[in-house]
Length: 225
Image (cartoon, rainbow, N blue to C red; front, side, top):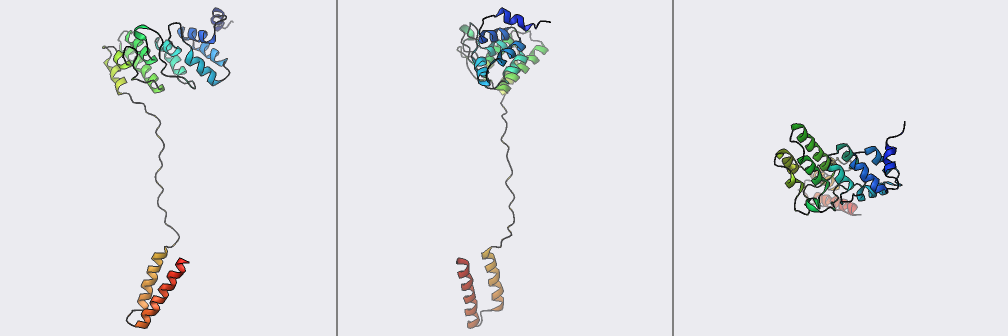
């Protein structure tokens, strides 16, 4: 049985990889997209192709997928090494300067506001935000994805407004417990010795006092050497 993807290649015989990639995005053909990228010589070449392939209107592959709400394709795209999450549309008109997140919001706005569609729309936006899409980028008209959200979808607007990217927190380690030293502190020992000797030499006799001071001086001399 012939591989149905062969038909795609026949239709685009002589087309560049970028044109084939755009065609795959338009047709929601993830298998074809994967095949095209597998022919790249490196991850860098694949990322360059994904990030620069655009249609005749100036929309990049990510815009094309987002404008159709292609969750599975977007999930795969955003996992690719070096993939750009916020390419700026080169198209004209009201969509000029859109990011893919703008495109996704426009797609959601055109769906009937059923509970299922509202939930699916929020899941799509969540996926894109988690992947690194910025929510505050303005297009050429001055709109952010938030300001584009339709009035009948206040929950989505609230979700985007309150969204914060939870980057992986750096692992912190507790400060090491202070370990008791096995070494004696000289000053502490000297003090104990002084106390011991004072108990022997009461200091009431001048000779005893001289002997006490002599021994103390010897200890200090040894400590300094």
